[in-house]
Image 1 (tube, rainbow, N blue to C red):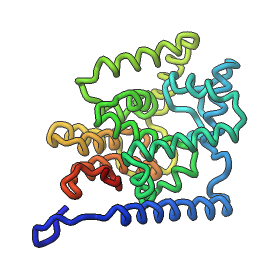
Image 2: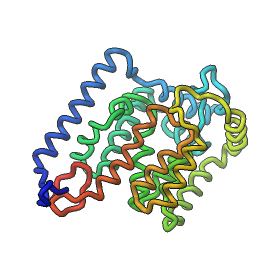
Image 3: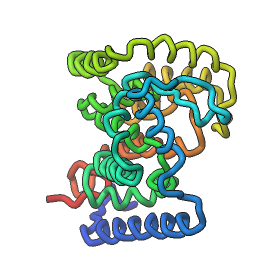
Image 4: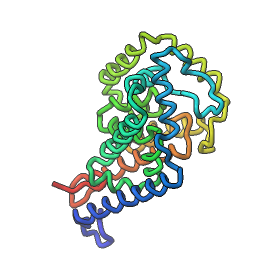
Length: 281
């Protein structure tokens, strides 16, 4: 980062720490007020779906069906349902704490440091994601990690939202393949879920699944592949992976934190590679 005169501008560590503290306070206030107003119920509605799906894996109850409100249906691939089954035996409040900790850890992965995670809390919708029950921050963390040649989380996320697959590097195919094989293998006792999943998706291709960003998936997919072909940069792959998520809700916009974080890491502070808000050693 340079000043107008060409001299390199230093951002003192204390400034970054202050920004991080402000971000944490900003998010905490939103969460407290939102909880008091009933905007952030505990546990959130989405977590009730994850708990129901996890229990259904063990009991044999239907997983893929059209709920009275389609957004209450389950749309992820069978391996994700099986993963939910590993924690659905926990009390709901314990699941909520676990999922919240995973979201906080995702901010650390995205930002590259805990100071950066605090600064990332200024990003729009982070508070709503932390107070909600979705896994958009985990998806964003998977995208960022995949750009850094750590493809495991993005591979898992691709079984839920497809888009993260575009962040994967072809050079990592062995690690991606190993994770995919494990995920498919854990569904062997429940192989019937795969045709049920396919039928559920194909039967609802034209359904309106709630208040989504009004940009058709086909158009977003064209833009995503265009970015991959034209722009040879990590942030472009991260943005492509974000745009290629089929059901893109307004809350999904928080995943844009991934390409922003990747772009910021290409900036130099005091001649050093930037990790969003990190304090140089």
